[in-house]
Image 1 (cartoon, rainbow, N blue to C red):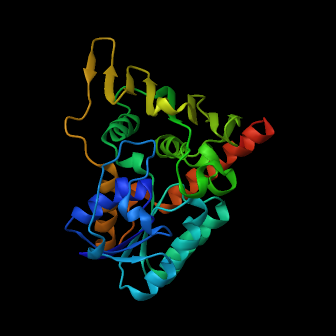
Image 2: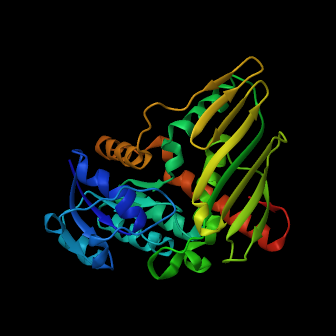
Length: 333
């Protein structure tokens, strides 16, 4: 059992990460940290349907200063769910104090920050994992298996979409501040960027467009350029009206079939038949990614399925997209 602390108990921290950290026997949650003590008693609304979850605050040590917590507690693991501009600072501090780090996506705001995080993990012999949670969804793993096995031939065309109502939530409206969040281009969209990276590897170049009506980089649309000329596109957008909610999925056309993930349904289409591949018992991917990380910590090896260096490359691609959208030209990665 690993002694663990959760840093950041806002909407995602409390709604997605706190429930399994409390319930799983592999993890001994000993401390919580947030600049706002009131988050212990409320559930912040986000664009996901999350569990209404309450705890007895007296069961855990609570801090408003992560440095004080790290100095005072004996920790094996910290789960960091704070605004993006704080990811590198807190991760490096924890790693330098001999603590394994799971940090939410995006890894950071700059390539220099991602390298500092990787260097700190290597220097201190600790594990670092970034919350690229799509790698732990069953639906995206079905797609990964078909891409790798080439069961239905090569990919001809793929479209990934991730759209949300306006990101009005968050501490001090940090999501709306592109300098602190990276905009939807980094925060929301990086999920699909990482999926493109996981499935097809680094593209040669990207060609992107953006909108800035609600906030800078509130949406981004990208084509990824590969040697074999397959057509890979993504759309990330958090500029929709409040009642829109959240919708994400993909359409991938192989030479001999197509795989569609829309409205929570996974459908394989061939010339002969349509097959519903929707998992009967969905897993909690937020729990699954951290449990696999815990196993790797105990085994003393990195999680090959989701390496920190992969997350750094996904950020590099996303930053190239932002540059392409700003310059209105193709940008090499």
